[in-house]
Amino acid sequence: MLLPTPDKIWPLDAFDCPENHKSRGDGDLGVIALMLNTYMAGHPYKPSASDAVEWVKNPHKLERHQKAALREFVDSWQFFDLWTFHFRTGCTIYEIARAMRLVGAMAPMPVHYINSMAKGYCGSGQEPDDRERLISSVRWGSDPRTIWHGFLHT
Image (cartoon, rainbow, N blue to C red; front, side, top):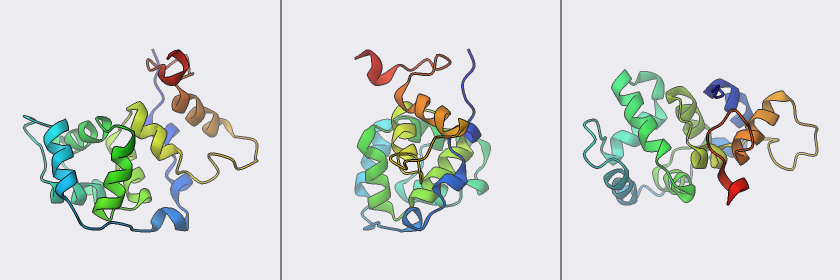
């Protein structure tokens, strides 16, 4: 079964717009620490909340085990966890999208949410190109190459 690769799902230039470079964090990392404790309990490389923020801001500096841990954390997010991470940490949507792309995150909920932030993704009125068709099919789980069937089969 072929799955789309991260560079096909989240082209980073799709997130490069002024709105996605705005930082909105309030600096309250307590909720992020709770997310880490919930989603990564017992993980040998579980970061602290401040480390997780640093990893998202500088994913290119991560070692292999840190990338794997960040991918596991992001892939475990439920729908509003990405929103919470964005508004609590000060990480921009662009930084989160870049980190997700570099670590290879593929879980449906985070992918769906971050893709909805790409410019021109929803309601652009333009005919989608092949890349946007792939994003849309992954978003809704309708691509026959994906094992996730999401909202179509509920």
